[in-house]
Amino acid sequence: MEVDKADKKSAISRAMSIIEAISSAERPPSPADLSHQLSIPKPSIHRLLNQLESDGYIQTSLRGLIVPGNRLQGVALGILYSSRFKALRQAILERLTEKTGETCGIAIPNGIEMIYYDRVQTDWPLQMHLQVGSHTPSWCTASGKLYLSSMGKDRRLKLIKNLPLKQYTRNTITDPCTLDSELKEIRKTGIGRDQEEFVDGMVACAVPIKSNRGKLLACLFTHAPVIRKDLNQLLEYIPALREASVELSQFIDQP
Image (cartoon, rainbow, N blue to C red):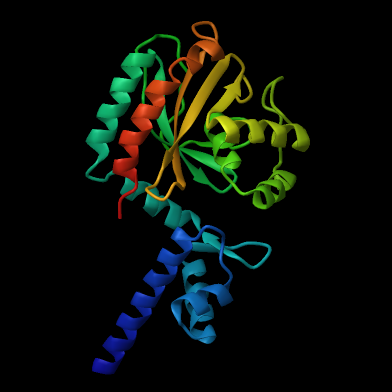
């Protein structure tokens, strides 16, 4: 009986180590990578990965690499959103919304999409309604393009080549070369821009929320209907967004 308990504990510990390694990896690891990194025999790694995939915590890409599954992403989002720092995040977003006069929020990367993670809406009767938890495309939103621009050149080009690049509005960039040029400019400025590329009549800008090591964790954005503010007017609030992003990084970059 004691042996069975020890084996069960070992399996749980290994599974949690695998989840932690996948969640923190810069690039999706292979089973062999995980076996080497965690010193877990290959037969055991494959058995645990099969179980985690069966339970929806991970997925295997077409290249055989391991990425977080829907269930794991849901757990991560739930922990972040209900964390002890929620009230502090909301206070920072509320203060920023008062400065900009527009809805401000946080988006986090999720594959080729961004998840609308947190927000404080303006009181204007005319505003764009996107629910917390909504998934938005990366190639035509301010936060999404900012995230794509943070990638290394090789990874960025590979991803652009495989993006669906669906046209949402007349301004949506659907040419891979044009999109890459836009991302290079965003990388230089550190400012994501959406010039009515996702929703007709809406503009947006975003700045990164970074970890202590300089890794992009999330994006802080604000958006507005063009009838009230054009993109240049919205960009005037970039200093306020950057100040808030530094504060927010303290409450997102947490164990």
